[in-house]
Image 1 (spheres, rainbow, N blue to C red):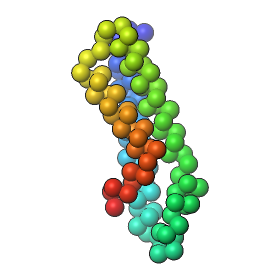
Image 2: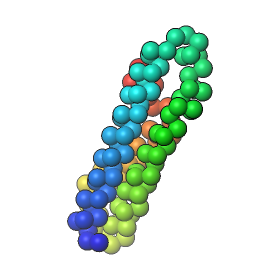
Image 3: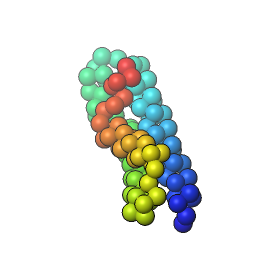
Image 4: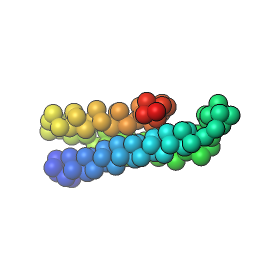
Length: 104
């Protein structure tokens, strides 16, 4: 795979993971705001049971990081690749933490 196609694929994967992170966090936040008091108190259980698919965001973000590290080994690494790595890492951290609480 050439450097340009690798870069394109990694940017597509980063975009998919970041868009998925935003979409799922929006769903979780709206579900939390619509819940009553008891449900809000125990929302961690609801979040874990009904939004387990959010961990699938880790797959494209991790693949993008692997592709970008592969570019780095061949000395084709640019500032845009560094930006893509930062966005992918943000997607991973946002997935593993309760980042939806920032949007309330």
